[in-house]
Amino acid sequence: MTPTKTTDLKADPSSTDEFIKGLWRENPVFVQVLGMCPTLAVSNSAINALAMGLATAFVLIMSNVLVSSLRNFIPKQVRIASYILIIATFVTMVDYAIQAISVDLHKNLGAFISLIVVNCLILSRAEAFASKNTIGKSALDALGMGLGFVFALFCLGAVREILGNASIFGITVFPESFQEWIIMILPAGGFFTLAFWLFLFNNYKLKKAKA
Amino acid sequence: MFSKTLHISTSPHIRQGMSTDMIMRNVVYAMLPLVVFSVVSFGLNALLVIITAVASSVLTEHALCRWSGKSSTVSDWSAVITGILLGLTLPPIFPLWMTFLGGVVSIAIGKFVFGGLGSNAFNPALVGRAFLQAAFPVAITTWHPSFLEGRFYSISKSVAAFPFSTPVVDGISGATPLSAFKFDKVTADTADLAFGFISGSTGETSAVLIILGGIYLAVRKMMNWRIPVAILTTVFVLSWILHIIDNQVYPSPEFMLFSGGLMLGAVFMATDMVGSPITPRGVVVYGVFIGLIVVVIRIWGGLPEGVMYAILLGNALTPHIDNLIRPRVYGTKKTKS
Image (cartoon, rainbow over all chains, first blue to last red; front, side, top):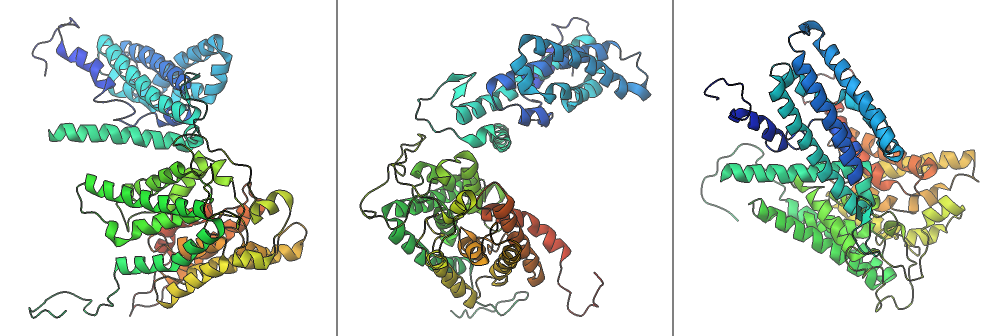
């Protein structure tokens, strides 16, 4: 509970909390288990995971800010359509930006860039947070959630690339004789790795709750 | 043992005296001839692979039980069975570190995360093997000829590969009858297939010993004989029809029956009490489904062998079969459907 209403963001303790919670306590992948489609599909290498995470984070931040600033103008009945329109605008921007930066990366991510539009993480933040909170808080919330998503995707991508391809960001980390675990870069490996990380997180939380 | 204390309990009052670990022990007895034969035909390599698989399964079971604060369930012998089955399904020169990993995956992911024995949806040994098949597709299809000279005192370089390193195959490798047929259209002699004078996974080669083990278990009523009979009949009938249609393209039914892991899978894996349906009719549906998938994968699929996937799919279907096919409750009227 905040004791007094204040407009100064830094003085408000709950503002920093809005940022921190997405990184850890309410991490979108490891705790809320949202946005599984890109998480499982394009986390087969560290660079793909990082690019996907950053693209999603960008869309999330921009759409949260815009939704929050328009929250008093959007009629309740058409809010979902409006959110999708806003999100789609930024996804189109990201799509072109990635194509401009690297065509190979764009090919690797494929349809999943366009599918950011329907990422339930972004829609849930717009509906559950941005439409009810100030622009500043929404931006911080989106930043926290976005970075939490990037962190989670990177965790998956790094493990899968190291075991499945013996490299990270394309740089070989193991000697020549290392036997790659092909399963890790196959879709099944995504499920195994996600389960492994969820297990670590839950185990950590349980231990903390007991202590 | 007769206790003089008055004992009050609900039914059943008459017990057969058959316990989990007794059944499991008998399954191990039924598999021992296979283990012996695999050591005779593939030598020291096969022995090491099977011992490693058993050791890693038992160790994982023990460690996980201890870790979750329960008493160890190693003594019910189920981890030993998982280990032996895993060992029997692997190629004889499979690297030991991969075998060990397979045992860990079998018990940890195939069984323990579901809640231990009785709660696992899939046959643990096959989960481990499916993991290995997807992770190391080259190593798991590197076969070794049987009855080589010097097999009792030399260890293949591949078996002794350093943990996490790529196995080096030392020159000698041989195709299994199924892969030879799939890729070169060469069929093997039925007698060789039946008695096991062929290449293949450590325990799948001798069909006769597998059938003997199955008969032992069926006679002692520790295995549902309907499952292997349903699977084998389906495979035989389907491949017989196909063979009549075109005997150049499709292999003979005897070849289909005695080659690959079909016998081993049908007798020792599909009959896993946890993963198979309960009712006699349900079991037949389950067996026919597995047989059908085996034929489809072998004849039209990209892989030479599909028993593993067929049984795993059958395990997945089991809860639905049990839901749809229920025994009529005694005293009630027959319902339609």
